[in-house]
Amino acid sequence: MREHLTEVLVGAAVLAVALGFLVYTTQTTGVTGAATDQTLTASFRSAEGVTVGTDIRLAGVKIGTVTGLDLNTETYRADVTLSLAEDVLVPDDSVVVVASEGLLGGTFVEIVPGGSFEYYANGDQILNTQGAVSVIGLLTQFVSGGESAE
Image (cartoon, rainbow, N blue to C red; front, side, top):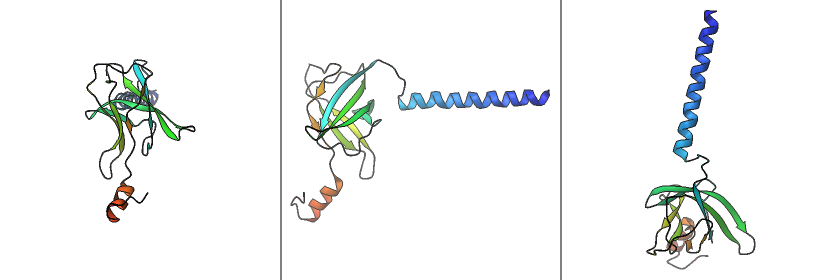
């Protein structure tokens, strides 16, 4: 009887640790399933490095994630769906940029706020965008003496 009690206690401890990891993971990744987010869209010439789940940052602080990435077959641009915290107001003259954390770092979407007193509403499209900069293209241009190799 004592062996069964030990097995039950060890099993309960394993389940408690697993639940703790689940809670920790959802809190650190921002996956809460809350319906309090606002959704904006943007269209990029190049969204290289951006995937679903990519961070969206404002002043270096994560304020949301990319929830959708599709190719628009009419314009041949990448349509990106941005899910932002509801309490973050984005001025309607802001620029959305695909940025890199460094030469070998990851990619994130940065919002550079403008100075307007009007804000995007849920479901609006951000028109001012800047796509990813190709490091290989920049190196090729540098090596060729400033002439564009593209």
